[in-house]
Length: 244
Image 1 (tube, helix red, strand yellow):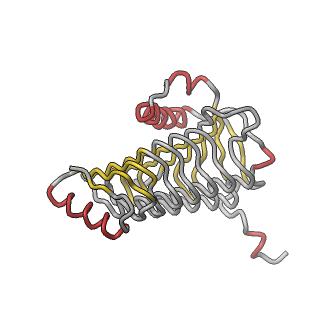
Image 2 (cartoon, helix red, strand yellow):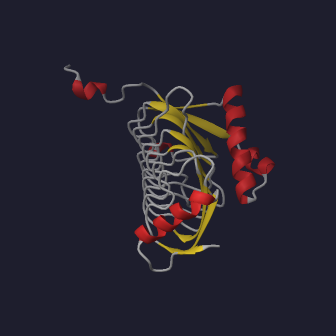
Image 3 (cartoon, helix red, strand yellow):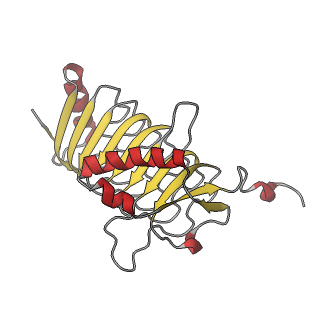
């Protein structure tokens, strides 16, 4: 039995989702119209399937669960998530994966500004963000760890892979970029390098997942070369706080 959101407040919807998951491993929510916090702190072994447009903080603090959205997400999808998986059959707004510490997010289409801001990793915890089309400005801002994959699929002539100030303040992690991109939009503290064999193996796994979820052809996606963005230093702003 599905939960119908309609125009009801998000508190009601989330209460019903939690009640449904007390006895089941999956809850389905239909006719979502911007309700917030759906799938918040969802535990491992639980799935929430959503149809419509999800509001801010979808799957925030995700704790190992799985959230699948057939539609678009607004801002802060996966905010501070600590594990699990988010799959979006559409696009998302600003601050996707803000401060995410573990888990994986797959976005079929594009993301707005500040995707992957403050991503971080620790020991076996490693966040991954895979974006199918392009991204707005400040992608990977202050990134401290984890991996972002930007595929650049279905772009029209004149579209840019990412906006200005890409990886501003980045001091850890890596960003895999498929195809050509505007180097003038990169922050000056970033190096562009080729992928090594370990990188290729890691990237291949993420792209296979993306293709499985969204029906793309793996060989076609991988036929175009990738480059890797890494920070040139772990202290990009050291000079701002150090006397000359």
